[in-house]
Image (cartoon, rainbow, N blue to C red; front, side, top):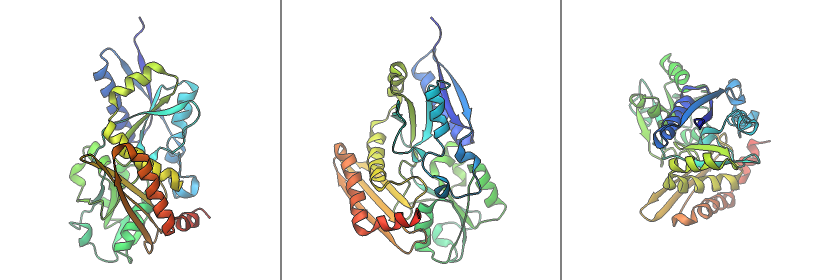
Length: 308
């Protein structure tokens, strides 16, 4: 019998490769004798480093080429950061598994200041996330928000070259790359509410690939999936990509699912927040309901202004 090989489509950034290798390792542990190989691809999002992603079609910029690879048969699965995964999937593809979530918080990284609160009012802060920007500007209206694109190493190098007083990154990425020591402060979600799906890894594959779907189910974490499905339901209702000032974070607390949502103007002058809870089987309904609350407050006006 020919040995089974699973080809994993991945971006080439160090973090994407870490995630793909992690999935490869988990699969090989779960299925002795299975072989995996990485199919490294460059996505449009990796090529466009000089423009804000919201302006060049924020949704799916990091996944489209990987999906094409699966549809054409050059890859069997694709590994994504859940915060990059669009709400809709191309015909024939679906999300087969979500792994246990790593630390979902935002990380404050600074060589000079011990905490976010210690920053001077006019601090130079690096981030390209409108979600992070709106929450920082609310606290520090005079802060100078500077664009920060590229992979984690590139971003840290720019901080070390003294281009910024601080930068904000995802804690999960730093931890996965063995750089937890660079985290000056993990920001409480009450201060910086995380992105939809932040810290979670998703695996996409062809719907009709029965064998691969069965294998991936061994890696699936139900608790993470419940939380992320609530967050994604909110995002779907708001029609938001990862490059709009939308935050959504759900947690299981005992037998309750507790979720917070936020939409803000990029300058931080208007921020709508809401929270709801319910049972885990109501996850998607809770997410949609949070979106309806935010829309009722006027979130749609903020979102419309961004796209015109």
